[in-house]
Image (cartoon, rainbow, N blue to C red; front, side):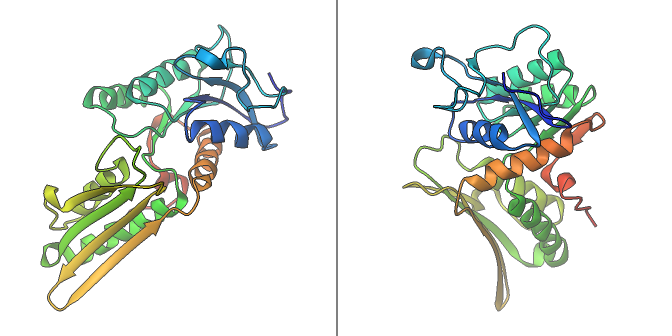
Length: 254
């Protein structure tokens, strides 16, 4: 375990060997405002006795479970549906808040998240980009203003290895638009898969003689990592409840 840092946020990362989780481990380990307590993965396999940050012997060893008595402030999850449930169990064991960055959550897992949020702070973020949080509020404003007079559609694009389609972000944006009054049919939320696209979402409002488009493009997966750390810092010591990235940015629905 790395040396504790004064006034740092102690984090455990679930999905520590994944595309985003591994980068969260590295960023948290290098940031003086954080202490990387542990990195968890479903199976160690060939990485047995390996470190959370490859090649850095000062970083914690990878684990499949936390040790009894492990203390943390925030559990960050970028794994799978079952991993998200495991992350909530770890948060209960450690008395920590939880950031669930996993997408394609089942209804059962969402019910477990709702129950957990009555005991501790839980932030669900299918996309931890700060820009997406701002886009969400722009969509809410546009949908609430234009309403059913404009036809709404969403097109999202991701790399060919992404499992869920449409993306969790697209579905979240769709819920925001519909709740605000947009005319958005389910078949107008479209997914494109190919190459190594990190993420692109466009929300289109088409009216008589005019079209409004709101687009967010991810140019580096580092935005998810930095957004996750901002959210984790915000969650440290937060009261029980169910939160979103818009809460982190102190963006209030109007």
